Length: 274
Image 1 (cartoon, one colour):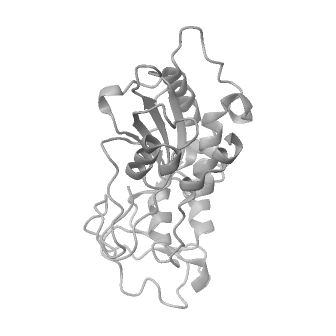
Image 2: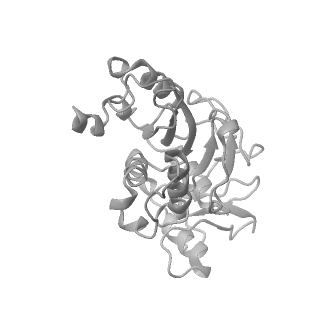
């Protein structure tokens, strides 16, 4: 969950979900897909191909969206996760995951694959959330998610308008009035922060930290020299703990507004199934 208290647009939602079929004729079937809007997407699946659903789910409903993994930094990152979850046998990062066992349901198998994905690079270092939309169907994963991947329950928070406040761990934080001033210097290297670079700013109240993304990443990775992407670290200024995903979200809130991507309505996998 990202920082809040700042009047800016909310974090974009990119999720990969698992559907479960409730139709007695097809009960137990599952489907993995990508979405930017879980509620609308499940309606499309249950409405069939004419409503934007996938070929593999059309006419086999009703379907329930059991869980969704979200927090991906981009649609591309989510789509790569989706592909690997759909094709674990073809992903070199999941070569250690065995095939579906005799007597293992499709649902249990997909949860087993997911458990390994959340602990495999590069996904193990992303600020993801595992959200159960149907807690009554929840099962413990064979491997617990990494400590920085929280479990959540119920529908994801609505995607609010750009100026709406969003509840978060820094709910009392207020932006410092001069954090975006031209000519500001990085607190770590003392070099000027160019406008197009977008400084990373500590969201804790009263902290004036501003730093280049690469400088702060190197600071956070001192204890993990073999890694490229930090998970969390201590603010060099106020010495409070920070999640890397929160810092990136706060930085992106002030970038130019992206064009809305409705990729799920014309999913590339459906083109292969016609």
